[in-house]
Length: 183
View 1 (tube, helix red, strand yellow):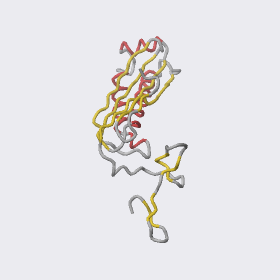
View 2 (cartoon, rainbow, N blue to C red):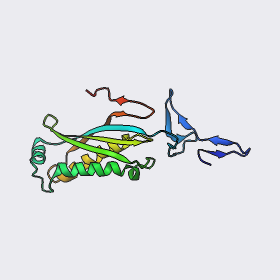
View 3 (cartoon, rainbow, N blue to C red):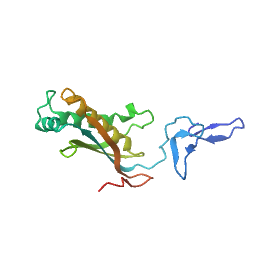
């Protein structure tokens, strides 16, 4: 029976989420502490957007090599953009309780920031669906950053991937979220 199971008395017990402090609840954990995929079937399809970011910190010489397009493995930034897009589309294969989504947009922006020094990666993911795309945006950023690392690790193995986080999301029941320090 969808959404519940029958007790010995024949009544349907609903599977509730595990309570958290305040009004929040862990929706992927049931009241017995077991993992579950949330049923989003009754939710209306709405436009949902998530924006995430991360950075790859590297030496100035490594950054200059990447920006000039002189890495031995080829176009670092192009490969990272493509990897991020592909990762967003495959998130449900990587994270066990994510729903497969009909993503309508994935945009990966990579900006050189000499003051880090390094690259700032930002992913914007959009869907019209019944659940959000936060995990897809975070996965896109993570894989884009890992691809940058992979493409230039022969030059610098000490690069650091940092600050992967959700910057903003809107759409859906929970409404708009914006990181406090987002300008």
